[in-house]
Amino acid sequence: MDFKISPAEIEAHYAVLNKIGNLGSSLTDGFLRAGYSTAETAAMNYFANEAGKIGLNVRRDAVGNVFIECPGQTPEFIECGSHLDTVPLGGNFDGAAGIVAGFAAIKAMLPVAPQLQRGLRLRIWRCEESATFGVVYCGSKAAFGGLDADNLNRSFDGQTLADAMLSQGADPGFITSRQAAISQTEIDNIAAHIELHIEQGNLLEVTGKDIGIVSSIRGSQRSRVELHGQFDHSGATPMGPAFRRDVNLGMAHILVQLDELASRYLSQGKDLVQTVGIINCDSGFSSASKQINQNAITKVSGYGYFTLDIRSRDNDFRSSYCDEVDKLILDVAARFGLEVAMKVISSSPAVGSLDNNIQQQLTSSAAELGYSTSSMPSGAGHDAVIVAQQRRTDNSTVPVGMIFIPCRDGKSHCPEEFSSYEAIARGASVLAQTIFKLAQ
Image (cartoon, rainbow, N blue to C red):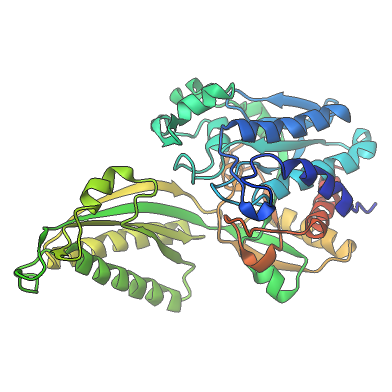
């Protein structure tokens, strides 16, 4: 049996989603559906209501995630899932394409669902993006009891995560007590979990492939590095570390040497991506504004900071590399007479290899439907990472797979983010075909 999802089905859902959290009259004006916001709730409620109309069961866990299931009692479930929140001024496809595709796939299988040996489930996770409260995977981490309580005090737009959760009917007490909102029995019953997502890169588009079969997911460590020196007059203070404690000069040397360190490991074939995302910019770090504003054109810089995002699909290598990075920063800073304060903002493990059987099933499903494929790693993180960490009672991990679909010019987290309804429909068709096989 072949399942082919119509682009018209995808377009019908987007006709509604395009009006929830949009920041202007055009899609290119961008979106904001922040985690645990009224807009995110409205998008989740849309799918919950649509599910009820076609006889699907809907339930919510204590931390606000929505789960849509085919009716009936089954010993195991084949799942799909993603998120509906966006970064500020983001697009409407990161996460949302996976929910639209997942809903369309389950709807397409409703006529045959009673004959399947396993149930079907769509998970809509809350607050996946870190761009709001500064912590990634809030909803999925909280669901499995893995979100640290100190994250509840993080703020976005003047509201703490705890208050935002309460405003949307979720219970932050589960996070305070690290109590899972999903039972161990439910984890034991997940036979497979698949997430569809836009690629957020341009490999599929450039190579002309329809579907990406994700082989691994990079983990990340994100840090903030503060450098403290001394403000001095730029004309009266001689150059050189004997006279100056120049933060900007020391930072420049640090950044160049970090790039050289990364290049050395890349030449050895290591999987590594390193990015300095923020330099002396108060976006998300307003407490630094007083010190940053003391810098001037006629001063030797006495304060500065930058952020560092280090990613790899090899957890052990990433850990040892981060240790090397810390030592490099301290050594270079010492040469320039600088004091250093380093803080890890967030850390997420890699999934070195997604489930081989699911990868094979996705590949064969795409071939049956006439779609070309490419095996590829995911450079970005996804809720699938959190699901893949969950252990059943027998100590086995939940089998997880991912589908990538092309996005125009590889752009994501920006108003230009775009994937066609045809591309989403192809991905949804592969998803449905694979779920059907795994559920038999």
